[in-house]
Every structure is written in structure tokens, then in C-alpha cells.
Image (tube, rainbow, N blue to C red):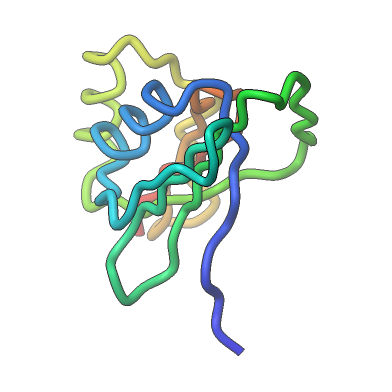
Length: 120
């Protein structure tokens, strides 16, 4: 069994695409309408796992749970922190270094989903 994607329901597709594409760096692999009320975007490498963003005009409430985060690895935590500062995205927690070879911090995406940025 292989991991395919994680689905995130979003409040605003354009704002979410800007975050995951321009800030996190995920490529937009596919984007389409699923009827008149729903938009879907698949982000990531063509042959790899994806982040699926779904915007549904009829979705009014979002039930995000604490304790769930989505993580992305970067080459330089300092550069990632600089980029987020330049984009006015506050760091929620961290940086944290549980061992000498790993450092990470957390931010919230535009939907309140916790995103972990890690450097190994």
C-alpha cells in the first residue's frame, strides 16, 4: 500500500494555493472544477504523494482538530523562517530541536491547519 494524498478542505482556494504553492513550494499538479460548487487542486510531484485542496461553496463550518499537523522538510530552517517573516506569516511555535540533527517550527496555514517545517 502506498500513501497517495491528504485532503484539506479550504475556506479560500486562491489564498490556500498561494500558501502551499508560493510559500511551501508545492507544484500545482492538477486543478479542476468538480461541478459548479466545488474546486479541487492537487499539489505535489506528478508521481508522488499529494496535498489535495478542496473548496466547496456549500461548506460553512470547518472542524480542525488539535494535534494534527502536516509536515514539510526544508534545506534551511533559517531561510524558511526568513521567507515566512517576509510574507507576514507568524511562527506559532519553535524553533524546536529535539536532537542535534533535527530542528523544526510550526505555522498555521490560511485555514488554521498546523504546518510543521523541519530541517534534518
